Length: 98
Image (tube, rainbow, N blue to C red):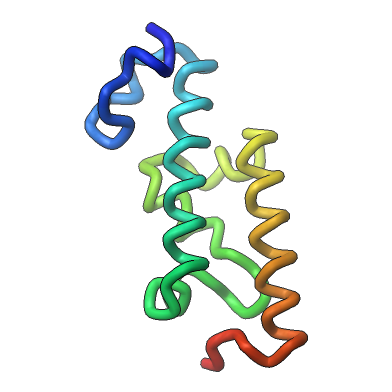
C-alpha cells in the first residue's frame, strides 16, 4: 500500500502499515498538526513550551510514541523548523506569553 492509496491518514490503523509507510503517515499527520498550531494562537498555547514545539504534544496528536519525534528524520526536521519559527516569534515579542 502506498501513501496515495490511503484515503484518510487519521483513520488508518498504523499497526497495519510497514515501518516505512508508518513513518510517512506520521510525517503527514505531523505537518498538519504543526501547521495548525503555528496558525492558531489558542492551539499554540498547548503545543509550545517556550521557544520549542512540544514533542509530547505532537506525539499525542499524531498517535505515535515520543521516540518517533527523535527517530523520524522528517519529523525532526519539521520540529527544528517549528522551533526556529517559535524562537523568532519570541525574539520579536509576538509569541504568546504564558
